[in-house]
Image (cartoon, rainbow, N blue to C red; front, side):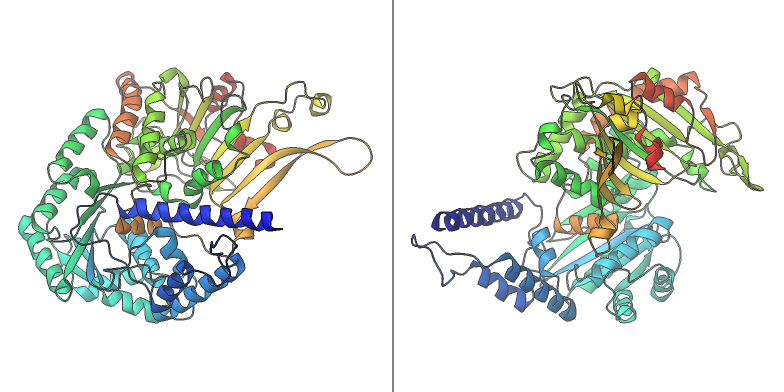
Length: 598
């Protein structure tokens, strides 16, 4: 028993040491800010922190202190979290997860500026996410939100504009209306031109008035605007509205250019006014719960790491499908197409996270260094390994579903693809010879985003006569479903109960909504909070995009120069037939088309 107690003690000490080391690394990341990052902590939480670090009355013979049981700690954390929600401070669990700092939470002000505040993205995603963070008490006490756009309106009109999009879907404790009113009182509007330094100076003055009671202020700008005015706004904001003593950060939405050349121009223009550590290039798919869980699944579970290579994995599929078309927004989409809009950014980022080597730490730079290595090891995307499609109209049950060219905002003879699938290879020791199949499309049968890992067949399988030619039964498959119905499941073969020997495919299933009661936060909530906290792990670094564009620009140019015609597919179908031939070329089939996945 003493030996067992000692082993438990060593494990507890190692766990605590690891947490302290991670906090130490996070606290010493280079920051521009003179003031430290804002955070606040309730008195009850401080007391709990002190208790957890104080020596216990019970010690071993060597004098080492024991720690409290996980059950007691969990109960105290939950009690503190409830107390924090009631008294308006961040929950203890979130404080621990995000490593929020304590000293200046009540002293520093935070001004959040949403540039393009009257647009759809701001109304549908940004303001609801900010309110959700406020509702969960995850924003500093002294924060204010400023909308900036060309539209003329006063503060009250602005509040009315965004109020309709706010909901209390997270842990509604019955005080939704009160919280909403409090949040809206912190929202203000400043009309101005995007290219006017004077207008941004007026915004600066208004923010300074709101920050006057605090010794220092941090400022975050969210550029929810078309890419052609990114650099103009960045120039005006950095010159006229930057924080004088705290940090200034800018979240930049995709697209980050249309090819290597335009990306380099955009990047160079941003660097004239901002440093790399101030630029937060957002890809909201990296904020999805299951994408962030990807590294946990792989690096925190010994069962997966030995299998994560060409020896055991036959192919990897990253799939994104929507069951609706452009529907009035085709004019914007037609400038980019599905390859630029989804595959070159969302899917390629997921691929890099999936395939990277274990980073030296969870530090943002270590993770992004490994992602860049993967992208550099990837071969060029070739036209012969790509299928392009465009959805056409379809009549079903007396209803006509419009085709892409039926959208009034789309040019009548457009050949812009609304569907694309391609295969790529990563030329390194881990993944040599394993095809990575990327597929994305609009107006398909289902809405889904998922990663499918198909394993190699069992060599010398004793039950091959029972499996026959059924490729699905012969293939074990790990599925990470990003949306909808977030979950992870593993398809394995299992004996059907009863006399005789019949084999069937069974799921070992972790569906989030059945396991966890909590509502998953929106990706924008996570990413906005990460930006405020200076956590860059889920944002894209400049060299990642540079390599990504290098891999896709030649094939995109070839498609446009040759005027490649996309294969037509009916609205609501499974996509063009060519996609099936692409998978068959590598001796596999699309996992999302299997009978048990319908």
